[in-house]
Image 1 (cartoon, rainbow, N blue to C red):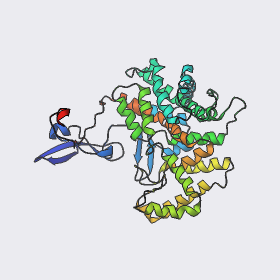
Image 2: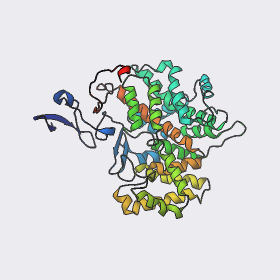
Image 3: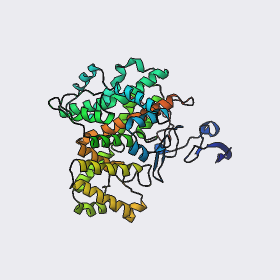
Image 4: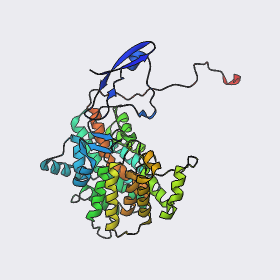
Length: 427
């Protein structure tokens, strides 16, 4: 058995080193406080493994993203979103019979309780769609009491199905309410992504025809965002779930975390940046500003907390963006021209290479979603629709882990020491 030695307070302590199937080893310090009386200090948990998981693996240095061992580019190129959902939930790609059964069950859970439509009228028309999502998803637990007992495997399965199935419906309703159009019910004869586009863009007065190129693009966007290991929102879902909270509340917590501009709002920020640059001619000015340490401006959509190489999802998203723009006849899009030139600079400029500021998935997804017809306020909502299956899979894995205990991070206290209360008249 490999061990790591720590010298502290004139004593040597040994801790077991654990190895995963791939990836770096971890030092098991779960007994550190008991043996030394000290904690570790790791802001942002950048060097801490908070759990054991067999769902997603990321090698940021080499630009690798695997779901249950399958490379993300293969899944996005050859699979569909519900196939990836099945893989994340159950660990293996489904057989034809399993896929048909899974698709059938998800499709027939897409409707929401009719009374839920009244929830939306309680929000202002100009409410951000993510605010609506937080409230409505959290309210699911008030409507589906038969799937909130986390100790029952059958109820956990039903809750998982309901969340994956109903999230696109709730997201489409949030969009429709935002733009002042009537809600559109889901259609069981459409695929997951096509159904979502139909609920978002169909209107009662005329038929909406599904464009297969756009539906496939939406499918890829969902696949690329399905799971991403222990990011902020996934960690939030796990932490909330560790207390025994019901799955609907846990996913609502994940949505709240995702809303942050440093997490789910990155593609919106990237699109706004491309809009600010405007044309290719203005790029040198913004590149100079990005390199200036005294200028607060920074290029959005470049670099990643984990990836220190080209984001593997960005390559697929770039191809998808071109397909969508080509299908819609958008040949001379200034924003895409700026994006392509920025990418070229980022891959050849020594400054970007040295700092490993490669284009990430948000760089292209914002352009694609804009071309599909979504306002920037919906970008993070779409992220939430896709990431729901990852959250659910991670939550399910956590609940079924016998080693799981309630999350309770420690702290380095730097406040006042003990002191006596002083009556207000003497202060």
